[in-house]
Image (cartoon, rainbow, N blue to C red; front, side):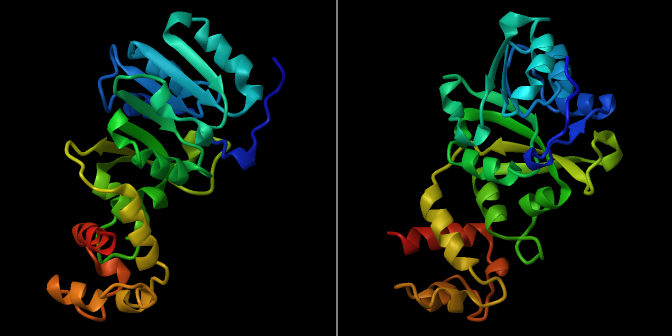
Amino acid sequence: MTVFKHKKYLGQNFLKNKSVLNKICCINDLKNQIVIEIGPGKGYLTKKILEKKPRKIYLIEKDHSLKPYLLKIIQEDPKRFEIFFDDALKIDLRSFSDQKFFLVSNLPYNIASTLIVKWLKNIKIFKSLVVMVQKEVAERFVAKAGTKLYGRISVLIQAFSHVKKKLDVDPEHFFPKPKIKSSVIEITPKQKISIDYEKLNRTLKIAFIHRRKTLKNNFKKVDFDIEKFLIKNQLSLNTRPQEVSKDNYVKLSIELFR
């Protein structure tokens, strides 16, 4: 087997700590479940997932040079695995199964947020997503209105799911060691979702175009009476985008795009 060289441009920081890996796999009962792992790398997390006796594991890995490591693991239980060497950003996860599944992954840092926002469009296909991301990204996901980190992605993820930070992971548990801390989060789809993703996303892009300006200012080029909306919902005319609750943004998206 040739010597593997980590590729920074692919966000490759492999989690090796067995205790942390086990904690990730114990957040949900994976026995007899369908599991998808994005970016398995050398398969450290994959091995722990396999120990939980899932019915099926789908692996998606972009880096072909990792193929020898993953094929070695697959040989232990070939009927349980399917592997795809492809870009996760280009794959429609709905094609894997007509049943709901778990996603368990140490996501590549450079595409984690993009992937999660993409998956929100079809959040109902998941039972749960347990993913490792940068700690700051996790804090943005769980941020509340009125706080510094609250923004478009906070509203989107909280509108469609319940998101919880499960544990923080220090850099020394990875190789190569990243410069930042990481967090494991669990994203669970809401049971009843009647929100139009595209309308909400368009609304948020307008609202947060200038974080430091008022909502009234950000909507001045839009054919919509934002003052009337603010007054009706008991919000100040000087309200800034980060001060508006998720529920009010959902209301705004409905009125804005009737």
